[in-house]
Image 1 (cartoon, one colour):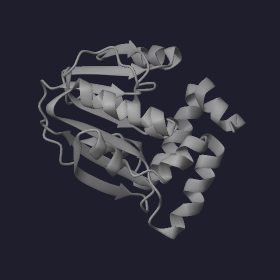
Image 2 (cartoon, one colour):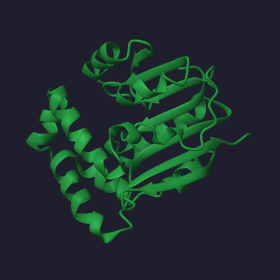
Image 3 (cartoon, helix red, strand yellow):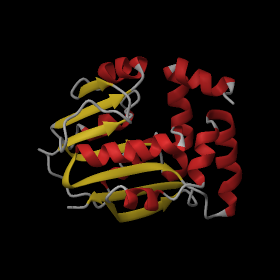
Image 4 (cartoon, rainbow, N blue to C red):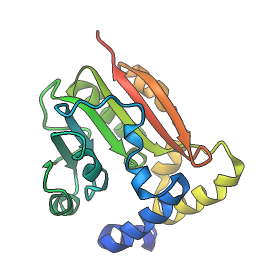
Length: 210
């Protein structure tokens, strides 16, 4: 079921930005939220980086500060238009994440920020396999997304947020073992951190050499 609030977040950038800012308070604000992918990440400015499901470029804006070759991919033409306007330093591709128009081993690093909860189970599996294909050997895949809260006090806030702004796929992600999915697709999870009472997870996985 889609609520009117979810519809507004897609239609109006100001509403999306307001919701994002409020949601990020639990991890210390938007600035820290968009920098979570940097924690314990060795920075190579020349690395080829993909912001997967980049939306309007909120996380892309942080990525271009550290990397010279950043590409944003999203299936929404509206999102791509906004991202180009907000972060013109990056390159952009309009395409579906489960069928990306990139050659094998095209990227050193792929980052996806609160987008995988939008995907159905099989779609999520296909996307992980695609990421594995486009990554160089020992390339890294960072996933930032919802997680089943470990602190009971965070169940009401996360449940309210999901009910107002998300669909059933977000609830499905809370029950999904991403570690297992990544392992099945040829990744090794090298770092796993929880934030906001366990309601947000940051996973870093490395593409294993066959």
